Image (cartoon, rainbow, N blue to C red; front, top):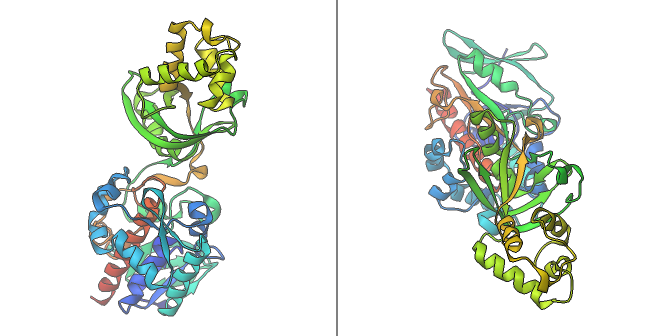
Length: 422
């Protein structure tokens, strides 16, 4: 029967980093992955460019991980975003900083990052076994003793790190295998839900697909409670699709939509677009009026093209009850104020999101109250560790989730190596 110091299940970012951390401390490490290729989700992250981390200062970084980001303070003290940057540059991967602190390889290729990680894992003597799905993690007398593969083979180890991801993007191997192993050890799994996922709507203008493909730049999107309280607001870019809305700010609002639908027990929630987040309603009123005044003999529909996306003008005018063929001299001022109000709060009823499997990130997971944040070790089952997306930690897109994966993976690997020697 084979025996190793540390078993890591899952060859994603947290699992690879756990291998590097544990083997770097001299532990004999075995990496098991059920697929035929390591780092599959990493390879498609950041639009195929791999956003390896975010350069924001610690407190701001945590704020962009609204799903229990504070749990990561201890792990980030062990291996911070600055350490992640230094780690990759130490491997010869030059990085560049883009908007909002996002860090990418200069090559703009995720493969650069994936290959560097796998090469480092190999160079540190980690044994890698692909096409080796785990059936169960084995426990005996209140502690971890190893794993049984689906082939029936048993591998002994006093420390097992579960790094198999959540349930989002299942074609990369994240199919929720680890939750059952956690529950067998006595852990509770908080309710799973999709985050960083497009929003769905059956508004007539969505169903008609008249706005499909329209991209909006530097607008803000807000989520509202049924009583009219603003729950969250994000500024940036978004996109209309055939099923609803997508793009960075829609993804960031998605977890708040999911939670609001559940909290208020309603079938839909209002989100709204502010087309001019840096201007007041009065400024919008006067500026749009000035736009059409400059083309006074043309219809307002044509006059507005200089300041608004052409595709949405007919819908805005319809909602404001303005005849598109009106000219400047015939504009009813009250209706024009309605248009300004719409541009500051264009409502869309959304009824949910795409599925968990279609989400970028899984919300929920192994209950953090049952995990030691300093080590990532289970408080219920000695020798059992969790890292990455299987934990109930989730952030926005922009390098935050991968930062959580790397820092928890590093911490789990380091601690497991120490435990294996004790």
